[in-house]
Image 1 (cartoon, rainbow, N blue to C red):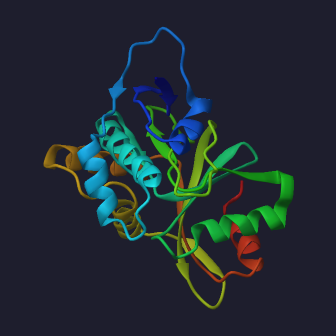
Image 2: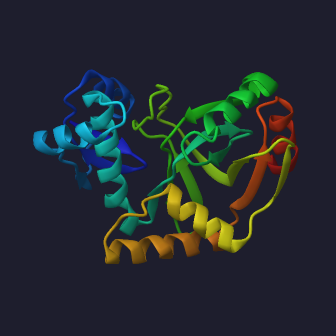
Length: 233
């Protein structure tokens, strides 16, 4: 099957219902040529699944395809950012953190605080794509288990890196903090040429109008209000 993901025509064949269902909104029946072909062998799937903390072949398939897709788009000005993405006032905002810190918990606070003004378009693996004059965030069929993987896109307004704290506070991120966080929340285990392209993507992103923040927060709904008041245009 062919799918249109972050405006890349992507061809792959899911084995399991989980990825097939998540991919359905991205099906592409147009005339454009395929940009990316993704392959995951049975042997790789089984070996990777055996190394997972909680083996699940369907989830491992999703993980492997997302990783392969991510490495494939880096040289074309794209990157998958491990984050929970929301759309508010027509713009996309990504909340990124290491697994277990609470990025999804935080975006759900936004749903509670602001209702229909916001929605989550991807809860784990949205793609950021860099163009000459704009930066767009895209939903993907790749998902960490929430099932929120919408085929939507919007201009990227901000990336917020979350850290746990007892009190809620937000501040602009330094260039060093941005690079460090992006490195660990994109694809940091890649070959030399791809790594060079990834660093160029980071530089492009730093020079764009996208804003970056460090959000220190707890799990109280006040955290959503603190973030909203600082980042929403």
